[in-house]
Length: 199
Image (tube, rainbow, N blue to C red; front, side, top):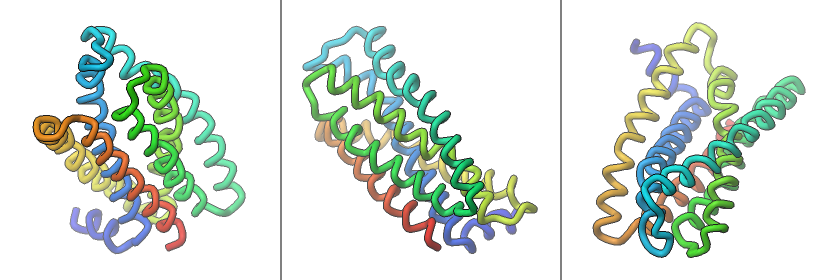
């Protein structure tokens, strides 16, 4: 157990991937929790059923195709002997998705919000498709399961705080600020992932 934890923090790329994964889950959990509520408020005024549908459908539908494409590209760059590009793909995916999160919380046009939801889902799939393979590229085979467990523990432990933190932000400043903060988290994690591929 101790070795499983220490291998993450002794391997710079594994540590950055874990941080990136924690940022990914924090934002996703915050978005999944609060986006339906956001769409029920002005200026959208959707019913609970409509808000639940629209907040989930576009992003997950687009993510389906994004994962297929990202997985294919990841296998291609891995076969070419340049696994560091997989980490860069994760970072680029987060950087492309970050403005979408911002527009989700700042646009009064439902068409722009739906488009942002779709592009957000498509782009974040480039992180999803590479999550474990990037970790396994830098962690010895003996520790694959332990390292995955540690990454998942840290990621979801961090992500569990998002609904509460965004709830506080909503009460004090509104959800638009909350979405801006989520976008900033993904920009930070995206840059870290791109740098992580060079370590």
